Image (cartoon, rainbow, N blue to C red; front, side, top):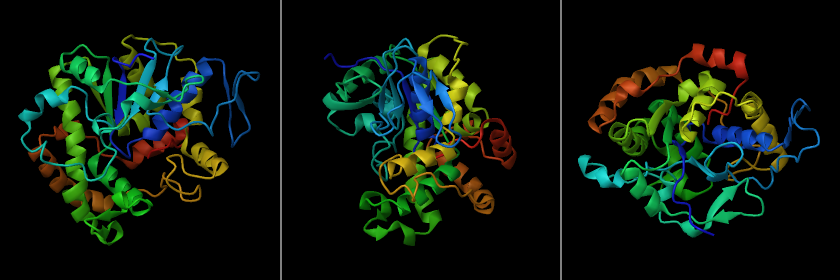
Length: 337
């Protein structure tokens, strides 16, 4: 099987709607192929009643997805990665190379994995496929790669969510810092020593490539996706396939099926969280809201630190209660985390 050398990439900063995107896009592809999804909460059959049911137990969350029949490219990446091609220009950011990510998982495509056996979902009878990261990097650096996009959350909400995620994670790589339990670490210390540097590393890679190859790389605030999930996801998919398509006939259904309450019901059915790290009664999708007092108290310091690392903070969108309320009325609560 030949290695994949050209790949549309829908990247996310961790805790920025990754599993919502993975399920929504996978539901869309499955419905486009004539499949069906049974809504676990309403009992509604979405799609053809005679179609093949969605295989929740076999679904792993990619990061590669077989997208044929929905998009012109055969494959699609949805997950966390540094922007392909950025390594060619990393010297423009002196702090970048000497600043490690504080936990694994921020850069799937450059963590030295066995990419000859990259997990893939929605491909009939194929669980793994070869991927040439070197070819992806070369093409992206030259502006000849497939379109890419980054979905990023405001850094305070992202850090708070990742902090909760780490505290409840069974792996010491996530729940400890320098051998000490993360739960005993003040959030401010975690924010400035760990969360913001990792956020900036991933964000700057896409920001730099978007400036270098305008039209090829896009940046999309997570808050916009949450406020208008159908419209914004359609816009992202149009960008990734390189056309102005307007007939995503199953997208509204796919987004509805990816609402948080439905994904929690799926977790209960599976007996574990969607990311596989904990039991279903301890979901990886927390329902608590970020404390606005903490948010407001730290925002100016966060902006100053990110600006020092080269992040264009004018691109950040800070959550508002109104945005969340509008979203709940329009689409139900999607899987924010």
